[in-house]
Image (cartoon, rainbow, N blue to C red; front, side):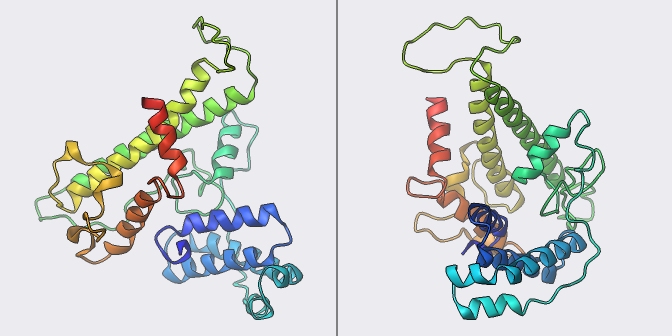
Length: 292
């Protein structure tokens, strides 16, 4: 279902994980190709780059035909055999040529987890130092007098908040992976609790990074409430409960209008997946554990 929704990047992640778990999985490579082919058709993003990735995974799907037969069927394997290359000259990735630079490990980590805020699928999307380049490409103001629609400032805040969360997560992961010894720059003296608990700024930083990332989702709902004139009291808006009515239907202002339905439905599905039985229930549980 993720393949054909506004959450296609999550589907891409899952197919990549399947291929990493079993490099013979030609069916995963074929499905990656289909996702990329759909993106090429929409004309959204860096189409030359996306086409180059399509060629890569289409060729891999054909090469792994025997694996496809193991995971799927002859009909599916034949379907992958019929994928035609685009012969794109686009890059497979950007921003990863100079990993010996000061921020090289950070860029590698961002690319590996595909956390760059850019229209690229792999890599960072740009060799520029400001590579988090995702932006609103088309926007219509509410009136001729409205020179700078409020959504632009809101997007700047959402982006910078996300970048802080991402940097915190990277630093925390690096420090935790360095070993259990207390960091030299941690001035805290911690009581031994004799229950194998780990204390220190690196662990608190990791929890704070996760919490702040989820806070960005709450702010996203607040921005949507304002931009789509939903009318909720801003301080009462929360990501998980904002998108649908009590009966589970999408709220009318979020789907009434061109281009609104699919992105907002994707966010509503994500909110549902954060519930107790959802795909990301553990993330919500961790946030609750870190605040209570």
